[in-house]
Structure formats: structure tokens, C-alpha cells
Amino acid sequence: MKEREEMADNNALDIYEKEAEEMTAMHKITDKDRFERTGGGFVNLFFKGNLYERVKVVRLFPFTDADKYISIRENDEKAKEIGIIEDLNDLSEETKEMLKEQLRLNYFTPVIQKIYSIKDEYGYAYFHVLTNKGECKFAINMASNAVTKLSDSRLIIMDLDENRFEIRDVNALTQKERRKLDLFL
Image 1 (tube, rainbow, N blue to C red):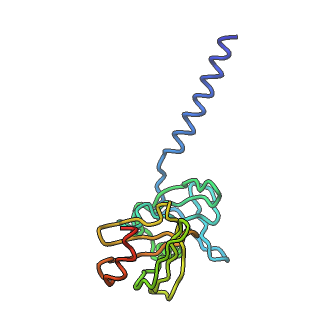
Image 2 (cartoon, one colour; image 1 turned 90 degrees about the horizontal axis):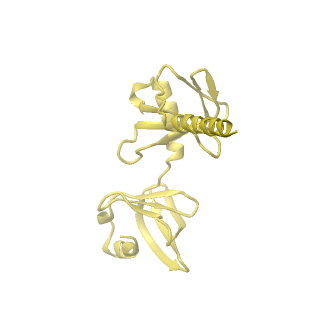
Image 3 (cartoon, rainbow, N blue to C red; image 1 turned 90 degrees about the vertical axis):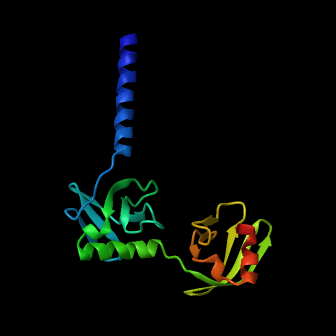
């Protein structure tokens, strides 16, 4: 009886080790693998004999190395990683453009050029700004990490709907605009 329990424990341990190994394994996606556009503007991947439909394309280093280390993930709530592209420039022009299009959609980030107002009410900050894409109003939760400093002068702001906005150079703003940002700096 004890032997059977030990065998069951060892089998369970083997299963967990295999799962952990698979979860931490890095699979490299190269130009030998095939991406294709779908009719709806999504991208499918044929990788190691499997078809992955509507894959997610995610930058691992979005601000420092935008075209390197691109994670390709399954399109479900777990977003399990299928593999990594080490460098987009190693792919064919057609594939590179297809994936860059997906990245542009995923990382749409208007640049804030002018701050009209920032109002702080009940734990939320309400922004009214001018971006390179037009005038915009959005809100952030003051208790969250909605404002990320990328450098001494560069900020990324994520609103309640997880839209990203960038301030490329805080010092380029007027003194009045910078004072409105003091809460976040």
C-alpha cells in the first residue's frame, strides 16, 4: 500500500516537472515558420505542425528594444506563449510588416503634447489633453501604478481602460503644465 502511494506521488511529481519544464522552455520562431493573415485582419501561425489561430503579438521590451524579442501567444485568457522571435529583421519583409501591423494595433500610444487640465477627485485623476491624434479626456486611478517613469523626462500613463499615453519629454511642457503633473513625478 505504501509503495503504491509512493509511486502515485512520484508520478504526480513527474507530471508537475514536465509541466514546469514546458512552461519555462523557450521556443524560437524563425522565418521557417509561417504566419498568414486572416480575412478579419488577424494573424495565424503554423508552428511545429500546429495551427495557432489569431495569435497575440507582444513586445517583451516595448520601450528599449521594440523590434527584438517578440512573444507570440495563444489567443485565449491564459495567453500561453507559443514562442519568441528574437529579431523581426530576421524575417521576410511580408512577415515583418504583418507582425508590425499587429504591434501597432496593440501598442497604439498617442503622445501628449499639451495638458489643458488634470482634476483630482475621489481617488481618480481626470486628464484633458491634446495628443498627436487629437484632443482627449481620460481618467486614471490614483491608487494604481498608472503613471510609469521610463526616464527622468519620459512618462507612460495608462488610463482606466488600459489605453496608453506617452509624454516623451516632460521638460518640453510649460511650467504650468509640469505643475499639473507634480502629483505623478
